[in-house]
Image (cartoon, rainbow, N blue to C red; front, side, top):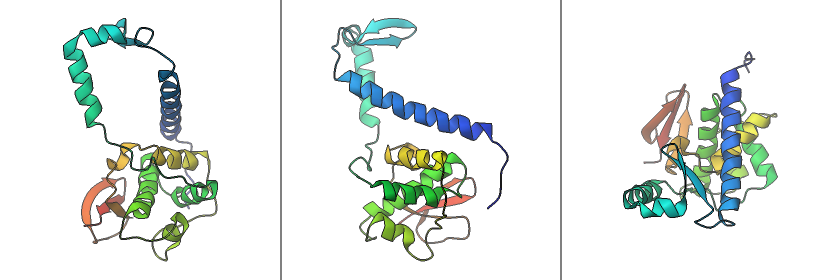
Length: 187
């Protein structure tokens, strides 16, 4: 494995992703405790309440359209053990950048969800010739696993993306390239 110098951009991206996950959790907890009158938003530089926003039918209509186009997290029902998360983190350890680590974790999760692959997360990751699993992982890799499970749209939450390679993989249909990794769908 190549030893890389300190990359501040990777640390910033990792910190930002963790911050967004924490903010989302806090917002969802607080959302259930507030009312329309005391929920405040900043819109176009002004502080207003949800009740004020609802009075503006154009804003309400555009907010509704935006919310309906957001993809649903296909991984939200997965209940992975800590050992399975560690295994995923060890698998993504040698991948770069952070976005690539999330994408590779999502490929393994997609295989777990896909009807053409059988077995546990461990079975899928341990399949000969499919994934390389190291002996180590760090906070960044665990953050990549948590980010993948949270439904980060790195692969647009397309659960048919079940292959990736740095070489000449030709099975499936080309989907996307991240750094030197080519991601492909099952069909």
